[in-house]
Image (cartoon, rainbow, N blue to C red; front, side):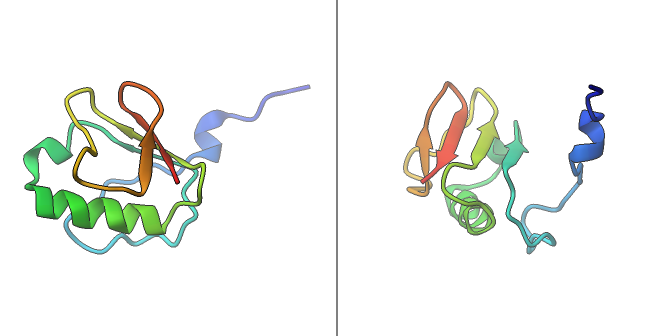
Length: 87
């Protein structure tokens, strides 16, 4: 059996995270690494609320090691150092 090329199964996008997100979801996994450390807490709350609306319970969110959703979002549960699961 041949394995499908992983890149063919993934959508890679560059986005302005302050603006409305152009995708409809659901998003199984979101990698938002080493970006939100530059945003204030209110911008972080808004961004993660918008991402959460595009994810189902159990979907994953990956942040950078210096980033955290503590006091930012209750839509995710920490399951690893920088990995969150949508609740």
